[in-house]
Image (cartoon, rainbow, N blue to C red; front, top):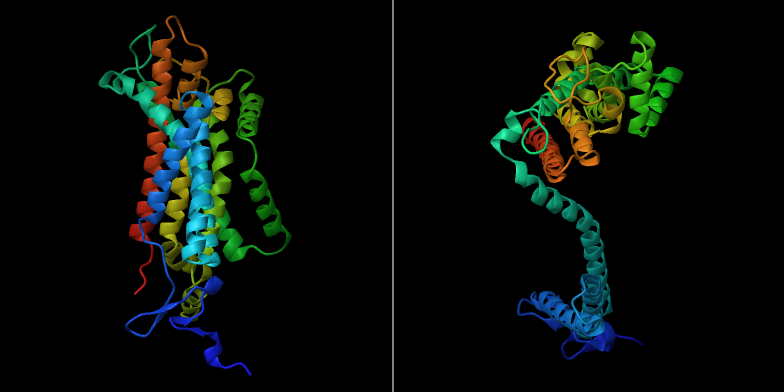
Length: 369
C-alpha cells in the first residue's frame, strides 16, 4: 500500500531527478532556482570562449563564428546548469528561450544594418540647402530635394483623397449592407488587389491615361491613381475590421429609437470606429508613400519644382533617390549622398506616420471604465 509518506523526503516532496523541494517559512513549496544574474554570466563566459575559439581557428576575429559559437556554448552551458539545479522542465524552458531570442536577433540584424547604413550615409547631406533647393541647373555638388518633397506630398495627398472615401464606403457596404454574390465578389477582389505587385498598378495607370491622352503622357495624377490601386485594399480591410468591432447593441438601440440605418451608420457606427479607421488610413499612407515602381512608370522625374498634378512630370522622393543612385555623374559621390539622404528622409516620414497611427489609436480609441 502506497501512502503519502512514500513520496516525501526530509526536505519535502521529491522534485525532478530526486531533488528535494524546499519548504519556505510560510509553508509553501518551492523548487531550487538559479540566481537572476546566471544567464548573463553564462552569456559573458560563452562570448569569451567563442571569441577565443574564433581567434584560434581563423587567426583573427570573425563575426559569424563568434555569433554561432556564443549561441552554441550558451545553450549547452545553460542547459547543463539548469538541468542540474532546476530540473529538466526548467532547463528545456531556458533552452527554448535562448533559441527564440537568437532567432529574433537574427531577424533584427538585417533591419538594424539597413537603418544604420542609411542613417550613417544619409546624415551627410541633412542641411538647410538640402531641404530648400531643387536640382534645377545643378551638376555635381549642391542641390536638394525641395521639389521631390513637395511632389511626394502632393501625390500622396491626392492618393488619400481618392482612396479614403472609396475604401471607407466599400467597407461600410460590406459590413452593413453587403449580402450575396456581390459582397463575396468585392471581398475576393479586395483580397486579390492586396497582393498585386506595385509595378502592375503603375502599368495599369499608364495604360489608362495613355488611352485617354495618348502614349508618352506623364503627370502626377497618374501616380496618384497608381498608388490608389495599392492603397484602397488596405483601407478597405482595416476599415472593415474596425466596423466589425462596433458592438451590435449600439446599432440595435439606435434602430429601437426609430433612427434610419444610414443615420445610424453616420452618427453611431462611424464615430465609434473613427480612431481605428484613422489608424488604418495612416498606415495605408505609410504603405504607399515609399513606392517607387509605379511612380517610375507614371510620373517620371524632373529637376525643377512642379506643383501641378495634371501638367507634366513631377519629382517624388522615391524616384529621386532611384535616379540619383543609378545614374550618378562625375564625380559620383554628391549624387550618392543625395540618394542616401532622400532614403533617410523617407524612412523618417514612414516612421513618423507609424508613430502617428499609434498616437491616434491610443488617444481616440474608446476608453474602458
